[in-house]
Image 1 (tube, protein in one colour):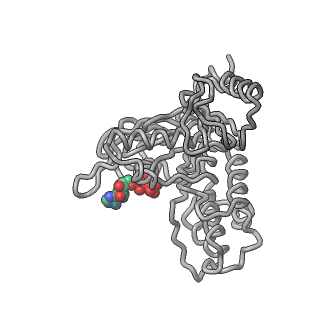
Image 2: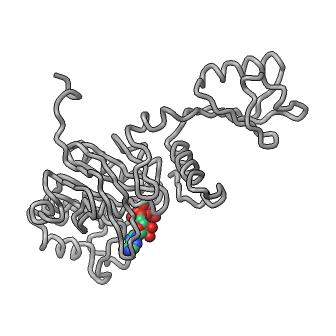
Image 3: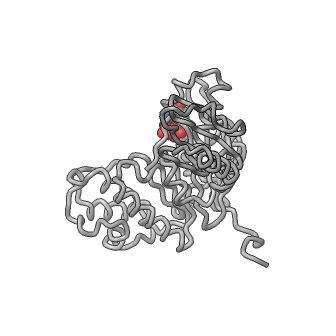
Length: 324
Ligand SMILES: Nc1ncnc2c1ncn2[C@@H]1O[C@H](COP(=O)(O)OP(=O)(O)OP(=O)(O)O)[C@@H](O)[C@H]1O
């Protein structure tokens, strides 16, 4: 039996989950997914898609208004005492008393954590060992996020919930956090990550789901999510050459001199374009060909969902998408 054929223990399960807020607004409208032991699952979404509202249910912070959630085989709200010691939670915004040092903060937290790591180990794990005596108010935004992470890891959790863990970190800090998350995953931890950074999901996630307006629009591995999307070839034509001169099969969206060809047959389309350019003596300026990325899949989903809802493209450009 290969590894893939072995039955994987399901550690996180959401089945038809719903959540409404006061006034009747339904923020989560029937979300289902599962995460196997040792997997990293990323929950992505447009602004206000309902990611945090969903994750809070899994963390046991609220009871779903419909459907069921299970973490490590338990209801995280009803059986909080069984679940809480085995999970680590890094909320979007942690709040610390700002006059305490990082060591005092970790010690205080350790007081309410069973089987806590030694303070120095927790700080070293997130690269804050050298900031042990610094007061929280003197830490940078990125260092505070790392302190949040140290607290989430204090009880050696089996399951880690990371809600936008790298927001506010610079590129180096973000990559350090990714490396740490990978190390933790190698040690067998299961991770549920929400992020606005598509590159972060691409770098870390075994599987992911994209949410929009309270529901999951698509899910799978990055390859599965991007498979149905077209690849893209971009270039500019030199002065004196018009888009109309391109071979018929490559007539493309032209925006001034800039041409964009969307194709499901990248190799064939590119070969045809290069043959035409060589035979016609045309120099393609800034030629760039790439397979569909998660970013494109995300934008496509946001655009088509907006169209279905009768919103304009201009409005939709406000959807928060960041590429680190
Ligand atoms: N306590 C609350 N009371 C009322 N509405 C709320 C509450 N919390 C969230 N909402 C609404 O629920 C919707 C989903 O919010 P949520 O924070 O879950 O989305 P999100 O995907 O995490 O968003 P973002 O990525 O922008 O942080 C939003 O419209 C939000 O305004």
